[in-house]
Length: 455
Image (cartoon, rainbow, N blue to C red):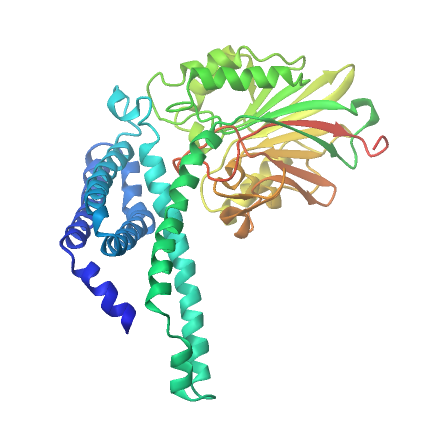
């Protein structure tokens, strides 16, 4: 009962009521913007109609909850009132920047005001911090429900008064817990800020992969695996050249790309990509398959990649000679639609190449979910990207992480087995969609392929 009395003034405060109206207005504005942009500009804007309830309504909930925490802190420390009102004003400004960056993310116009140095990550940090707060509030809510259930059950075994008396908290302790909760609520903001550096902290991750039928003649073949570069926005020329420098320093024998080269849909934003890829040195060339973000004008992209020295395999198979020994490399285009219906199409493509010869084969396929649908034995090693390593989670080791993607049973990163076939899913170079990586670093994967006879 005490908690209700203490939280009541905050819930009735003028600033809280205005913030609630403001958040309601933001969500309504996004819904209307989705309808207008989707009808008159580009149909993909209709995606906002889904994004509002699953992303921005939780964001608004977290904003309001955090505001109440700050209100409690202000009541405990009245001298902090000027700082509190300043933070309220800054919060509204950050809301505006976040929404403006969201709605102009696909624009070809010069938006240096929104994407200049020091401001390009503002919306990403602001949104992700409140997303983490929402998760924290949800977990706290589950714990409280469990506590209430336990307390309710105890009422039937012990005296009601005794149970309630054990739950009383002294005013001093309650005040301490309130102040501690404010500090704890600030942790997601620090974590999100750290995600800015992590998002483009490129690194080469070396692995040895033993393949059951890999020939001794090709033992030690070094394959650099790049995926989901997503040129555009923050993935600029300088960062692309950094990726190329790291790739060349790893001295791969060949380089494979598993799609999603692009971010935007039109314009010349992708020019730095081809300049960078043309600088990669690999004795046996660069090979690629296409991802879902590459399919708006794939013929144009394939021509540009060819000019940069990258051969795109579109549902096709080629044979290389590596020191006089044959090596097959195949590629499958990303197939849209539910995997339940697309699985048969993924399986039909390798079958169209005819019976498998006794030749080692690498298969480039953007979506790792298709691994389960591919014909058994259609390749020694399937290489995929698409998941960005899970994108948001806790990295537990080089190839293991706790991510939402992984919890849904989707191969998010590392090596997976299916009979004698192996799937490797890279954490990818860039990212798309969620505004930054959280906890999951990017990678340039360098795979040394090993024969079981030499392992």
